[in-house]
Image (cartoon, rainbow over all chains, first blue to last red; front, side, top):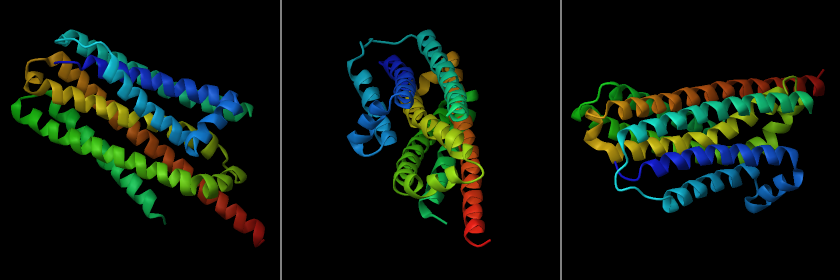
Length: 101
Length: 160
């Protein structure tokens, strides 16, 4: 397989980028306003930035002539665990945020 | 009734089922199963991307200005504060994960027959997409219930 690892790295980066800008936006109304003003809605901006970051990393990440099977399987498992942790983080974060609002 | 919600839910479920199909095909892949997984992943990616756009359109045009204030003023404000907030952000992950699965299957092709570790990892990632999709569909149930309760309490207040 060629250049598939960069897609996995891009997936992990997008997940934590989304978490980061969401948390910062919940604590800083001026940052959330910037996100909102870019497209008219903070969620639309986050979606566009997520796709743009994915495309950017896939384009610029170092390429390998051939990715090894072990690396790909390990990378996919890392992506799976990062997704699970980020999903649980969002659930707990928004529960906490709602209860302390 | 709102057509956009129906399309959003229908396409989301179609995408989830397509990734369930990918999961099943990759459990024990051979050439025929890999060919079917390649078709299923395309259906899944297009369906989830369409569900993303349509859901986003409804969220921005209708949910935010009309439904959200009713839920927040109703008896279950957590339906927005927790369920919708978590759903809308987890939803950003799903099409990206779908694109990664598409790229992995397209790039590996028939080698998945021999590369068992990779095919199992891609199958697991596909299953995660299915679980996340149905989890956020469940959150949609709480949001709809919150909106219905909000409308009912509003009409009770206006017509006691």
